Amino acid sequence: MSKRKVTDAHLPVGECITQLQEILRRRLCCQQLPDRPDGVEAQHKHLLELLRRTAVHGESNSVLIVGPQGSWKNNAAEVRVERSAGGERSAEKPAAGLLQTDDRIALKEITRQLHLENVVGDKVFGSFAENLAFLLEALKKGDRSSSRPVLFVLDEFDLFAHHKNQTLLYNLFDVSQSAQAPIAVVGITCRLDVLELLEKRVKSRFSHRQIHLLSSPTFPQYVDRVRTQLSLPDDFPDVKFAEDWKASVKSLCEDKSVEDVLKRHFNSSRDFRSMHMLLMLCLSRVSVSKPAIRPADLLEASRLCFTDSKANMLHW
Image 1 (cartoon, rainbow, N blue to C red):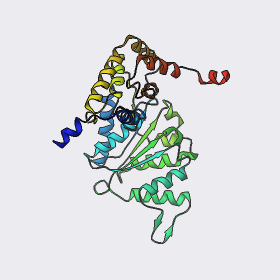
Image 2: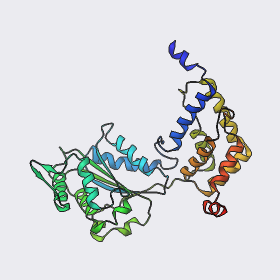
Image 3: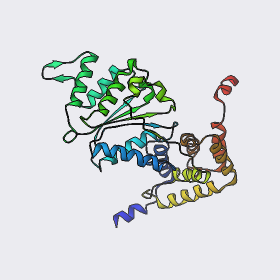
Image 4: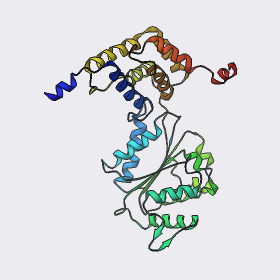
């Protein structure tokens, strides 16, 4: 009874719009992403199978996930890591090339995440060589049957290739080829030529598995994504406002001028982040006096998206 009362409550329009903008901004700012975009189911299944073989069967692997920006590369790795062990999360050690700018920093971060803390008894390791030897010894003294799998996710993988002598990549790939502790090294990059950046000794230890996330949605799928991104969840507190919003979004997507705008963006870039930027600009124009996105709002947002920022600076 109380639950129905809350569900059927009519909130002030201002409060509804505040909650609407909070939900949609969180979604459009990529804090809540779907498991995968359309058209890459086979690639995700392949990645899941590789990680499951490491998490369940103790088989070491290395793989590169290659795709343009906004193609859910990081999200793909995170979702597959969570599902690979059937709900039991393995030890995942993410590292980012933009943050770990050299092997010393990257090694320190990996050691911290493994809770090794550079200390054994009363001895503290200080140099890079001592830290590396300690980490490799910790990884190699396990076995397939008793060791917990470790998954290394290297974001911006191409930046790790610029590290001196590629020492970290060499040793991680070397351990992944050995028959000791099971590890999986997952590199994430936008560069198609990333293998050309690897030294010969590093390349020889890499499995040369590459998974390309090149989603090519059709225009109807693109419009459906717009409709989905603007939708409200079923548990939105004001049912009447949610129904009115749903009807306005449906009417918006069926408008001919809106279809022309979306087609222009679709032909310009199929990167969903550019679509999110367009919708964010539209969302910012929603207010108490205008509680829905109008075709004029989308046209103005499209004009702002295609405006040359450098040309605007010259006008000032």
